[in-house]
Image 1 (spheres, rainbow, N blue to C red):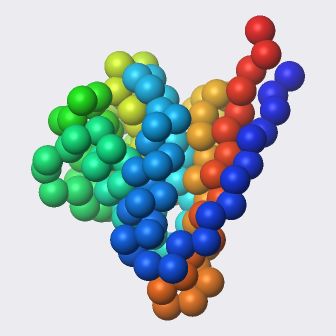
Image 2 (cartoon, one colour):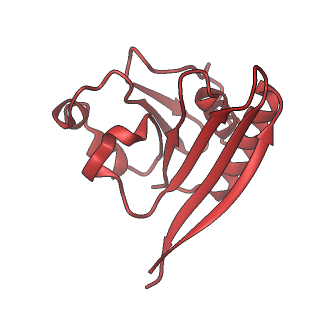
Length: 147
């Protein structure tokens, strides 16, 4: 049986969104997949910056909208994947998406709704929505499988 675990955070600034990502990162381990949802400007990349900070990434963290995948090197490899420009499952598979999922790193996937059948059952979902110019609602959930 899958049981969702849910937490809602209200962020009132970009730095609070980064901090939320940093605190959330303590739940992650090698092989974790995080599906990020939210409109443009909702704060997904700021949240990713926090996750990267927690894993001691020293590179500049930015949205991989045009490069599709940014790889960051911290205490655990982090693969920041942006599917915004992907038009089909063939394109997603063409970037080696399944190989990233099977790696020993952490996959952070923006626009995860485009994954359709590739979404792993065991994952974290981060849903972000704009409240106003500086505030965001961040809903964190996970699925855990009973063995």
